[in-house]
Image 1 (cartoon, helix red, strand yellow):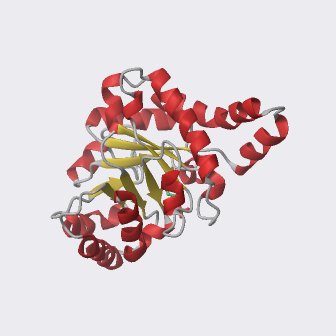
Image 2 (cartoon, rainbow, N blue to C red; image 1 turned 45 degrees about the vertical axis):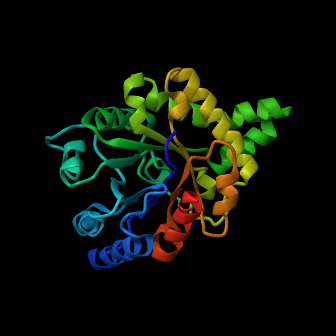
Image 3 (cartoon, protein in one colour; image 1 turned 180 degrees about the horizontal axis):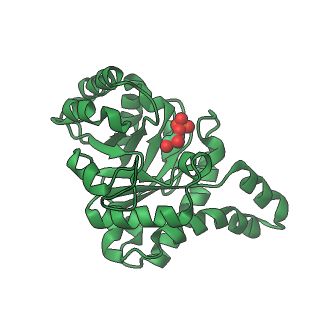
Length: 264
Ligand code: 13P
């Protein structure tokens, strides 16, 4: 399985000067040689260069928050996998719920983006998760614990099967799954360790069915209101191999505390 992974998703925040201050402070507080766990940060494209310069002598890696599914051409406003690699980026976050639900991205677009990303040499953090309504429906429409679990997992299963259905087992090592229940994102309401473990176990089972040789090795992160105060509980849940942090990654002090808590 390797080391645990902590990813900071800055979303659409920070001008270059603030991005420089934040990444510089992170490196200082963490120590340039820190490698107890793997750390990735995803600034907006406009801050890539300043952040890349700040982290170049550390073990922190750079991620993008999105990418397009073609290599080049007439796609105004889009950025391709080779462009990300050229900008010093090694990772890309795909399928984030804000892209699915605010920007209208669908499973097929995510599948195409993922396929081109991994075959271009990027590592992918694939976000999946149920909405609050899907969770409520699973509870009210089920008769017993087994059918509740099946109903609850079904939207997540569909997202993973769609995104990874055409991926060869040899590429799966470059993919990380992030379970982010939509109702827990930016709300301060994180899933409980029980809720996290239940879904993470289902994801693990699905991955080992889809990829018998390597499915056990794929990291599964939790995301959704991860904070310094709840990180220990989240990491204690079964099959949690790291976290995807939003708001709290915009504070160097909090993000470094989370990293050190995960790194042990
Ligand atoms: P918050 O940590 O702010 O809830 O955001 C989670 C997230 O969307 C990370 O991708």
